[in-house]
Length: 397
Image 1 (spheres, helix red, strand yellow):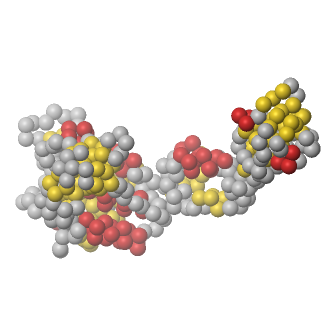
Image 2 (cartoon, helix red, strand yellow):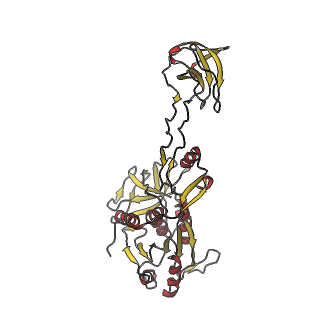
Image 3 (cartoon, one colour):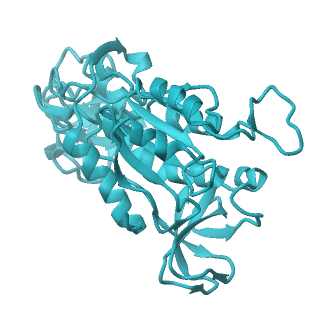
């Protein structure tokens, strides 16, 4: 099977999952729990927004035709109130931000542009009709569709749902993602490893990434380097909505994952991608479930999840769109790499997000360096030398 470029591999994941996916089950949850979930039903405005003309400034509600001039103050109106009277010629009503515009008024003058003299207000400048007024329905009209199913809800969406009275929200069930680390060298986190062993960090970094991406992680026992044990663990993992395997996908003598997956009738879409870290990446489907065989080095596991598996998970969660944001930042120093592969290397992005510095590291297993980094710089496969100050793509952690 030929190796795919980074772009072709990602398009393979997106196209394959979109073509065959079905939407998850729908559940109704309290609004307070809906942040980060995927909306399962369109949401429409239940009334005009705003429901009536309202002021967007503190000041005076006036008739524009009366200005400039000296006006009689006949009352005040605050947000949450309605002025009972009407503004006639030569009159003004003191008004607060968010308050309804009194009948008869057609403009608001900011308080900074006025001078109060007892029961009168002096306004020396003219006013345009409708200035500093949000008219009824300017934000949304009743029954306007405001959110479409398939959107992952952020904090602004939660505010919108609250504003239209949705105390309970229909969302898609979160996909369950089985996570399996493989290898005889791995021990559990609570164990003290021998010098030739390592703790199971990959499963727990993946669990955090899965949860952040909107899935429910299910960390299964480590699959040992035998066909029988790996078969048992993979069989359990294929009951989930998505299976992630870390390690065991290279060409080593004891790497048995692909052999076992083949026993489950797996269809393999690719088994190598021209990236670093993460070349021996496997994507396929077995028993009706998608799976990824992620390389076992921690950096490779983290990167390949973010740029490939996360997209599959988001689509399986019901999202209509999934995007990989890789903005540009300027390098603080010269950077070189060998052409041929798209490289994702740990880096520190400046507080302003405009400059990036590679983080010194000792290869894909250097977890302390990965923890120090807050981003990855993304080196193009045909761009060997980047000068100081040159723009380069970055992927945020």
